Image 1 (cartoon, one colour):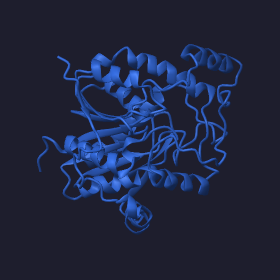
Image 2: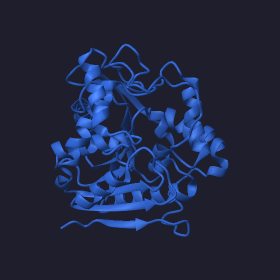
Image 3: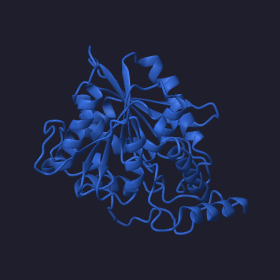
Length: 336
């Protein structure tokens, strides 16, 4: 039986006001004095190699009293540093954290000559990244329960991983899962066709038409929190040589191939799922997220009508409630 449940979160509801340690009114001060020093000093940082010889950079924050370990799974174009506040907050709840940069982005190995182009040939490569993290980082170090928290493209990859390994996790958290990315009104079949033709012409690693490198323009369609987004934007401006821009033809073709496959198998997702969704998400279609929660066996949707794509990087009003729901879900049914 499907246990699809929606919690509509309005501004008058407060699920967990103490979940977040960073007050937006003192955001820059707390980030500089507490969060970033913790992010840099408390991490075990290393590199591992996947079976296809791709180098991944990972970070581990091991809490001495943790009863659960979270896999913090990033979205497209993100670096581990984008998760610094989330890592800090989870750690305050006696949770250990493992995160990493996907192949082709962040401090992990790039897959093409131009580091600004997002490229992958098949989403099975991303699944291999997650399998490697589990085998070489998580299992040798942690014996307690492992719960993934995955954002956007990371949620898409996690869904694909779970379909391949249905017994690896007892429960998962999906934040704006990217199994049905917005195509801006252009038919998906047309995007796929153009991308495929480009690949046949030897242009698979080139930017897809309309895509390009990061040009330094401030355009925030991710969150209502200007302070949280600006912190990420300032990092991008300071690291422009390494920051990715748009998608290659192969990346878009591989994304659509994987999305279509995962969408056909949503009913195979059997474990409890907590899904966070913003009503003003411009990057992932609501229809696809709703379908996931309707077809998965046990899904609880926490819906914020005014939130945007990055619910866990939103203004305090939404983020505190979202983080509280996540922490409660992650820690439920765990014991020392």
